[in-house]
Amino acid sequence: MDEAPEPIPVTRTVDCGTAKLLPDVDRPRAWLLTVDGAPQSYVDLDAPLHLEFEYVRRLAFVLDEAAAPGEPLDVLHLGGGALTLPRYLAATRSRSRQDVVEADRALLALVAEHLPLPGNCGITLHADDARTALEAAPEDSADVIVADVFGGSRVPAQLTSVEYARAAARVLREDGCYAANLADSAPFGFLRGQLANFATVFEHLALIAEPSVLRGRRFGNAVLLASRAPLPLAALARRAAGDVFPARVEHGAAVRRLIADAAPVGDAEAVASPVPPGGAFSVG
Image (cartoon, rainbow, N blue to C red; front, side):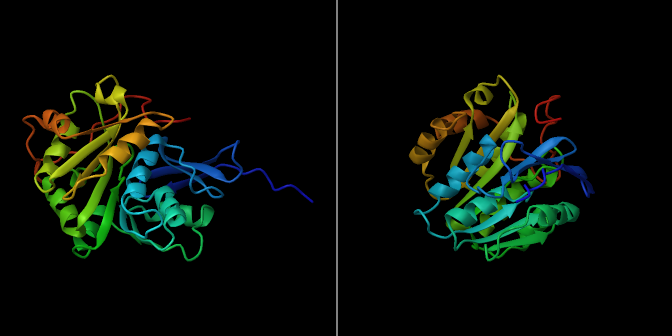
C-alpha cells in the first residue's frame, strides 16, 4: 500500500492578511494556522482534545467547569480561527449548540477546505463582525461566550468598551460565563480597563495567566472571566496550576487591586489592545 503523501504548507491571501497552514511534522493531521506570521490556531484533526496553546487550554478549563461532565452547553464563540475550541467542545459535550462568528470569510473558506468539521457536530459558522453578531444575538441565549478575536495580533477597539461588556451580559444567561483571551504587559493599562468595563455589569471576575505575566516580567496572554454567578475558582485554580505551563487564577481582592483607579472605557475612547513586542507571538 502506498503511503499517504506528506502534507505540504498552504498559503492563501485572506481578508485580514496572509494565512498559512503549516503541517506539524510530529503529528500526521495536525496544523498550525498563522495570519501575517502571528499564530492563530493549532488543530489536530485526529485528536480534538489535544490543545497545543496554553491559553486555549485555559479557555478549555472554563468550558470543562461550566457544567457537569458531558452536559451540553450553548456557546457563542467570537472569533473562529481554525475552530480549535469548538472542535474540543463537540468532542467533550457532544450535544452542545455552538455558534462561531468569524469576520474573515476567506479564512473560513480556507479552514472549511483543508480542516473540515466532522458531520453533525452542532457547530454553526457565521461570517460576520463579532460586535454586530453579539448585539444581534438573542437575550439570555448563551451559557458561555468565548471571545478570542484578534485583528493580526491585537484585539479590535470595538471589542474593548463597556458597551461591548454590556452586550455580552445581555446575551449570557444568569449563571453564564464570559471568557476572553487578552494580551498585555505591565503596567497593564489595557487589561485594567477591560476589568473595569466588566466590573460594571458582572459581580464576579477572575484572571488566569502565568505568574511571569501577572508579575509584569513579560508580555503575554491573560484569560479574563466574568459572571453574575460565582465562578468555579477552586477547580480552575487546580487545573491551571497542574498545566504543563502552570498558571494562577487571580480573583477578589487581587483583581480589585489591579483595577485600582481604572475607569470603564466607552466606545468613543476605546482602543485596540497593545501592539506585542517584536517576536512575542510570531513564528517563522
